Length: 85
Image 1 (tube, helix red, strand yellow):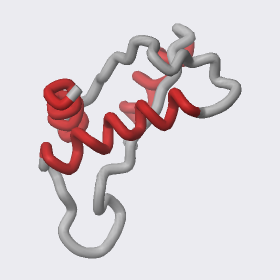
Image 2 (spheres, one colour):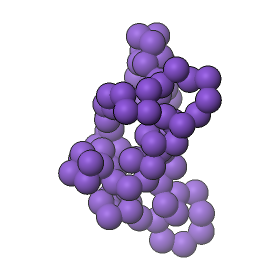
Image 3 (tube, helix red, strand yellow):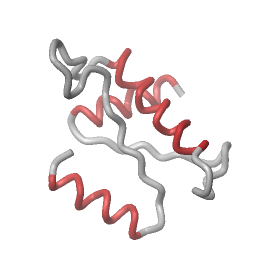
């Protein structure tokens, strides 16, 4: 992620929120990336949230509330995730 995204993440952490940043399918690998492909990015966001809830020692409730946030590609991904949830 970029430096400006780090500022937003730091604010969320200061508020006591658990933050997870997804790695989209194909990102950082050779070949075609699934940029703004809602069928790939939405499930990636939901999988990341589910994985975070299962991490031991986080204090996250398995059925607790989840908020989604994204900018640019992340905005499209969170919109897709909300549609699928």
